[in-house]
Image 1 (tube, rainbow, N blue to C red):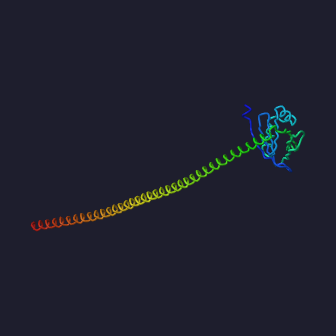
Image 2: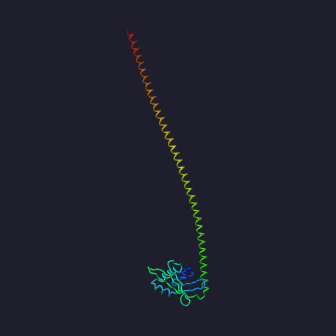
Amino acid sequence: MVESERTKHTCLRLEISGADPIFVKGTWHQSRFDISVTDGSSSWVCNATEEEVADRAAQWDQPVSEYLQLAEEYLGFQQPNSIYSFSDAIEGCKRLSWTFEKEGTKLEWRWKCKPSQDSKKSTVRILDFLMEANIRLSEEVVNKTRSFEKMKSEAEKCLVQGEKLCNEKTEFEDATYAKFLSLLNAKKAKLRALRDKEDSGRGVEEEQESTDKAESFESGGSDNEESEEEASKKATTSSKGRGRKRAARS
């Protein structure tokens, strides 16, 4: 991977016990790093070479990448459990140090920072970086706030739309149920009417059959009576004929 793609920049306002805060700007490369430090009036620099970083990493039995990552973690963000120091050293130099724990053992890392050749220029660069970072952060906050407001507005629209769809669904279900109930009641009424009509037709047929049976019975009785009457007349006529014949013979 190209080294420029691995370059990172950090800037830390470092609070030091018993002293004024300082600003530490770090530029982190793949196998080395550069540090600029200012207290507002003077500045110092530390340009750690690849050989120096590799030697320090070997002393702590660490890969170079792990060593740089840990250094960036402590100089990019102030760690509350670490003790930081920026003390005087020989020839106007300063010693930047910080502590951390590893496997239960408290360790301390120290790097010597030399006075900057142009203290004013170095301080301005750090302040410019802070200003640009602050502007970027402000823009990011504004953009995120706008995105949040937009998402909030969209969420409110979705909520209103959801409530509308829910109400429409409820109204549709109620209307469908009412229509189904109306059709069901109409079918029940129609079936009831057909059943009543069928029962009424059966009653009329039964009544007709009873009437026909009665008429048949009456017709049969009349025929019998007529037959008996005719037989009686024939018998009377026969008796009268036989009487006349007897009188003639006498």
